[in-house]
Image (cartoon, rainbow, N blue to C red; front, side, top):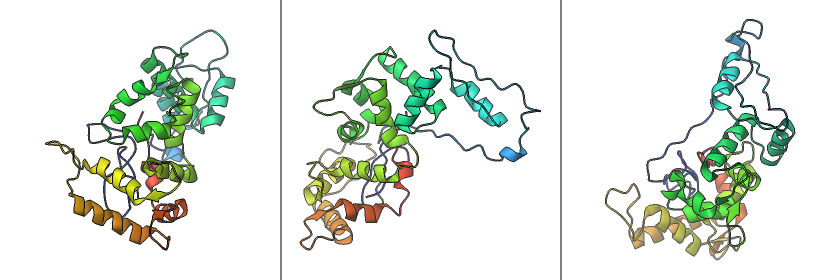
Amino acid sequence: MAANNNGNVPVNSNLNVPIDAGSAPANSTSSGVSPEAGASALPNNNSAPPMSPRVKKKGGGQPYKVKYTTFWGWLRGFFVSDYDIPEEELEEYRMLSGLEPLEICRLRQYFEDEVGSKDGYMTKEMFLDIPFVSGNPLKERLALCFGYDAETQKMDFVTWLQGVALFNSHGKKEEKLKLAFKLQDFDGDGMLSKEDLTKYLQLITGFGNQKEGAKLLTVNEFQLRDVVEECFRESSTDNKMQYISFQDFSRVMAPTDFHIKLVLPF
């Protein structure tokens, strides 16, 4: 039960099945922000050019301005941040999500572009239509883990940002463990049964629905059953081998780097 690059989904770590929550068999790419390596070798503030990021002037509140300590930090902000948010509002978003200010600004612009207004709502249908979600065999599970359920069919920016943070916020490995577990707990009873794991594997392998050229594994019913049994033998501490608890799941997954790969590449 692990996770893979480019946003697929989590499975048993011994299966070597590609899995991350964002990109699916469809052509999709993700990008990350590289650390500002070698800062000590860069020009200091006295020799660097003036460092004030480009922001669009909008009424109400002072635009957020980032204080940069390196030339590369300034350059990244200049090209990435083109959306101003009042400082108090931005700090509230940061506290809610744990995301960096520049990332919040970028996501705010993404949200507005998708829904047509900063005060609009992203419906579940809009979420499912996002390319890296629509091509993912676990798209309905992703929507559920993101926060869309029977009672929540649309989200304003704040709620949507919190959904993004579940997948993309750094330093929340315990929360990511819960997220990966929920992704596979189809009946929502807090345990992974053999039925849960079978449904999960059927989706990510395209079992019974294999299309020509699809980048999914091809397995038969007996192979699928063997994989499920092997997962339980290696993971479950239940005497009757009827379920995998969250503690069992955590014990197997915690030593891996799944939390780095379980992301949605907005």
